[in-house]
Length: 303
Length: 273
Ligand SMILES: Nc1ncnc2c1ncn2[C@@H]1O[C@H](COP(=O)(O)OP(=O)(O)OP(=O)(O)O)[C@@H](O)[C@H]1O
Ligand SMILES: [Mg+2]
Image 1 (cartoon, each protein chain N blue to C red):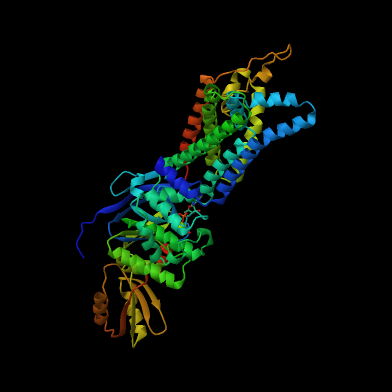
Image 2 (cartoon, rainbow over the protein chains, first blue to last red):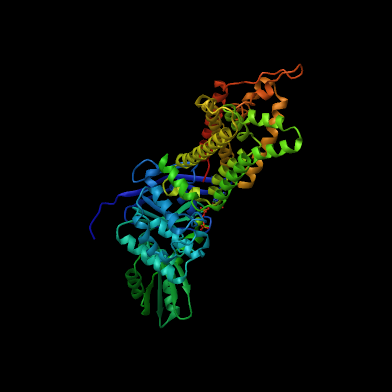
């Protein structure tokens, strides 16, 4: 892959949105680099859709600012973005094809691309059916097609696989990876953490409108690692572990211990220490937590 | 504006509610235009005094008075004009109902573009309506008028322009209500309530303020026709009808149109879509 300097596609600073008492977005600052696949995670009501609504110009923020492509916020910027926000939004009495014509007209692009995007989401055969007659999954597919129309520089997907069948979910995941390989920036809000782990390069975790964590997916996965270890003499092992200051958590299991090391401490350090104490290990593995486990941990820490 | 109009037309291309209302409006007008002269003839036969009715018909449908008469009837605030208002309300509230206004903006419309699109549709509807009134006037005039000289046929045609201004302003008022209330039902109710309460307000306030109430202003350009029929004055009925279009009335009407456009834009800008 050719090397590109890391341009910022989107900069958000100090964004704030209140709905009465509810603080939907709380002083949020973010930067999204060109070519990254940026995951936005957070429990229901954490402000994902509100944030995306603000940067797409449909929700007015109470404070803060954002800029696309280093430019002031104009409708011109939105024409370079393809987006799904929360639910498919189309004219129910118009066919899929006509609906996409309207999208193309608004974006100021030709109709030539409609066939490609409808084929991508496997709706080409149903292009003349009225949107109203589509099944929910088909509506969601049309929303994806609409976002892809005209090869935008940035794609925003707010729960794109919502309502899709398992094959559809797998296909969209493939599609996202494929699009990301073309260097297109993707911003993805999703509850399917497995999906985010497989597709995203960066993540931000929101809770109650606040940023809990921001970094690369690898950063999150390395936040804390569990080590599984065992010895022929579990009692001696336990005593030794309890004396070791660099362990933040010890969980005994039937024939082994699950421990978490403090930051910066490696398994080598641990092993050297145990050997010095005369403990011989029969088993030692590093268990990487999944994004899902890390996510749940992050949330429980803060609440 | 033409680009926005094309998009708006594409939106309504297969919108049944829209075409139903347009057909309803046209059919109602056609029934009146083709039916009323016949009806007058019929009543004339039955009444035993056919000459009186024939004179009435000749006066009402006579060039050039026909232009003021027909424009006056078409712009009556409780009459067929309301159908056009309902069309505009549906066009706007359906976008809020289906959240397609949101889609439009996400795809690259500004809020001003959305408004301009609707204004373009209003202008088109007003042109359509004025054109139909024009054709109807020609038809009624040529079939009933005594004189068909160019001077007579095209005299008083300024009342068509007056009609156009009145209908555009009224439709902008309807659009404003639709943007304000977003829901079709509530907007309809709001409009009908206002149609009822404005005359009450009018009754309560000082007469000098009458021209400045919004719906009054949108109905004053074309004043009650002053055909020879009612020029007859008696001791009790001694009143001069205005026989021209007053510049001030046009200005107040356009002022309201501008005001409602600005208010609509402010609401759209301030609100989450
Ligand atoms: N129009 C609105 N009026 C009032 N409150 C709102 C509105 N939109 C969102 N909220 C509130 O703002 C908060 C954030 O909502 P948002 O839709 O952004 O959450 P989310 O992270 O997208 O959730 P989900 O995972 O369920 O999609 C919620 O508490 C929600 O109730
Ligand atoms: Mg959401």
